[in-house]
Length: 444
Image (tube, helix red, strand yellow):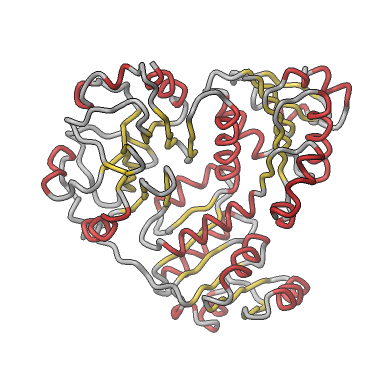
């Protein structure tokens, strides 16, 4: 596929790097040549130019483009760029927005007529991820695949876990209702084999089904929190999205350092408590009752501040914390600390765009992008060679494992004697950069 990415900002750059591993024809376009320099060593082309210039779009052959993605920092420019690209012949367009109203179904026809096929609102995706974290407080990350038939949960295991110090080959004796798909340890993601052992403080990616969740929670040594009080640091657009959907169900307090922003929040969030102050101040946290809060979410525009404030909240006894960490180099550091869920808008937006890309392709595949791994969904074709042997005999390539299968609409875990069948929906956990290999392996 020919893909043009307009905008070499954080989202565009991360997406380009991710797609460069997938054997696609990629061009990234930006007016700032300096932004393109960091991409010179990747399997893609860079071009200095404007996404709203007919001449520049013509120079990158937008008329032959299968997918045009506009992710500049400017919403109106993205909409115009998509409209121009569509008019010039691009098959499908995706534009980044900053306005939730644009996502409403009532306006979808307008954007279709404008030439914008899909919209990406990173703050909305982040708010949705946080709402999921509030619903499943015992996990670091939560993914529902195949309409919820399979669950992949990332859990940080402590010394009280029944899984600790157990080789995976012996896991069937105590936990045949789950599959350990990956282990994150000391900033390294491992696709485990039978002789790998789970250690305390590992972040373990577990595949299971809804009917076994209580058992998974038990063997992991976790407990679910009934969230009644939520404190958020920073009245960002993400915080507003969360508050608007949850203010009638949860008691919400937002601490915001900007006085004018506080007045705005008070006007649009009448059922929330808005406090003017700095949440990195321990005295303010104590005064506002952080120790009596079920969940603390740090959503300022500074990763370091969010990490620090979550650590402070933990010291005050908050059981679940959520930090928005936009700097990629801080994600591994944050995961190694005593912080719960990490939110990164770039990863969420890139993952969503990647799914749109795969929807546009002839292959029936989906993919969720993590910091250094991917969860792929594939549908097995009638002539797939993986249907001719039991799973234990497949000799899967390094860097991938089969996490589960959905057959006839029902989720199931994979064992050594499982034989895959044509039409099966297969969930594969793989390291970043090997998805294209996975796709080829399962399509043969």
